[in-house]
Image 1 (tube, rainbow, N blue to C red):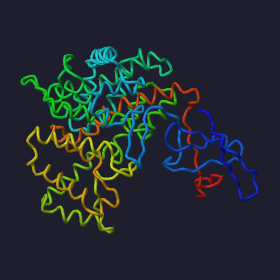
Image 2: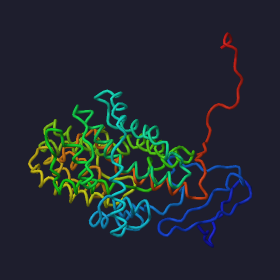
Image 3: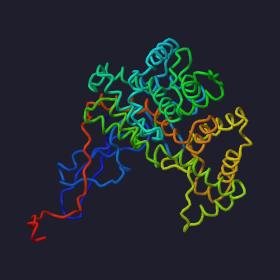
Image 4: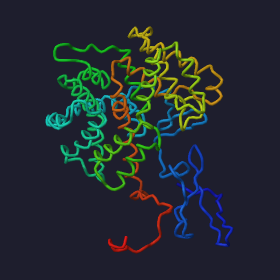
Length: 436
């Protein structure tokens, strides 16, 4: 990082001396004002709830332009990656910085494939949960428990440890998610099959049983692979920031990723696709397509508590580029499964049509987002709503690891320590109990 020739000058109206602040330019995106010496020189902090105007790190991994509706992984547009690459190629890109050549891809796929099994004792750990536990409660426990099984790769400051724990996490997440699912429905666990691709293997572990082999359908396998690619990383969001903050203490990679899983569970973050599908189910209960006009009227009413889930995005002020790709996949999957006429999916398509044409939505840029379509796609694949966020965690694991590794390798990284504006009581003395 080299500072720009231009500097920002901070001046105070109370006569305190002004201060020059360095400005850094990114390769793309807004410049940043370096305030690291602000407290030392002025005795003041900045105040930025939610860190909406604060860059906590410099990064070379993912870039989002919300106004343009652009998402780049290591400079490559998400549209091109989703079209021309599979998930493990995307993982390689996020971890290593470049797309693999054929030999590198073969070696990487083999490495991941050879680590897909989990320790047999994980089954006994899993059985400590109630059968009706939310899969994210289970996943938070299982991912954290990995550090109890792999003592040989828990030193976050050792590059070899970080590399092997990265491979283990990417390889084992599909196995853990499918185990959480099978446990909840009371079916036997299905072991990984090394002859299958990453995504086909996941689908088989989810839907095969000992009495009935699962035949992977290319359209459906490609759909889940695309969901993985589109969710693999998304810049400095809440769960990624959690992983970085947790990892900044020097904790092991499995614990840092478990913290990310816990953060992702929140309905405002990873639970958005679950909320979108639950909204569709609620409209369906009230009368389905016939009642859609009434639902839209309530959404537009400022005094109504009805919320439109799966539309608009905090970062994308334009159409979410991932949503365009998921829309395409959504229609492919509905055709391949013959579900176009299913009442719930008919309702989803009717709501999509209104949102893309109605002035109220178009003027506010409330376009369907990736969560809207991925919820429909996963439901069409036979994945229960409660498992949606766990699949998001599976996909995002590689992004979390790439971000964590980047932070550890950054010579400027320090343990995270946000500041506060204290507005509570000033110093006071304790009154003896009898006098209170």
